[in-house]
Image 1 (tube, rainbow, N blue to C red):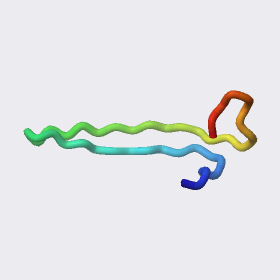
Image 2 (spheres, rainbow, N blue to C red):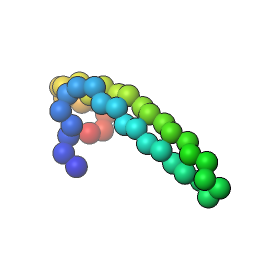
Image 3 (spheres, rainbow, N blue to C red):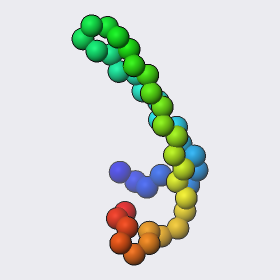
Image 4 (tube, rainbow, N blue to C red):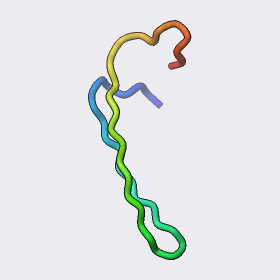
Length: 42
């Protein structure tokens, strides 16, 4: 995968169980530019 461009992203999902219940979810995160600090993985 390529690195995402800097900015704010939102990932939304819906999961359905075998009995039909639906559970939605969402997470927001921000990607900033710049190199990784020592000890960080990229």
